[in-house]
Figure 1: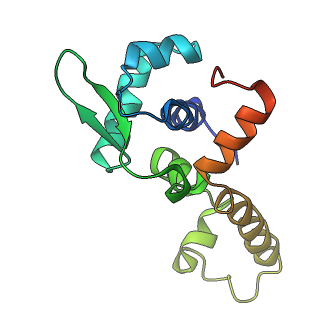
Figure 2 (figure 1 turned 180 degrees about the vertical axis):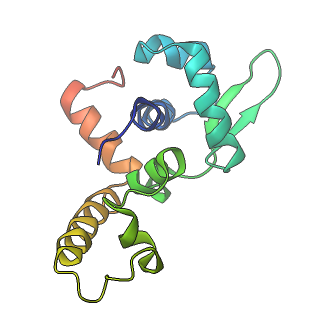
Length: 143
């Protein structure tokens, strides 16, 4: 399993919004500058996050984006699955119907355990945890 730049940047974008922790929306340009990421690419990612209800947009001259919920209500897994799709290492873990050998295949145990381990990590870490870790590392919100 390899997380693409889309998933990594979505996580960084959400972390930047969580670190903002104010009622003042952040503009894509600000986030792009903070993160050293192309604002055009972030616009594509924010569109996905907005459609899914992960962020909300505020229109107008003071507009931008805010988290739609509290940071503790997002998991790393929910953000990655939204942008990356399934995090399963192989297709048969997601849909056993794809493999008629699933019941007799010893390797399926490996894939299931790997999937459980990955899910356990990414679903056990919230955006609030990332905020705490970032502040502990830097003492501010520049990431």
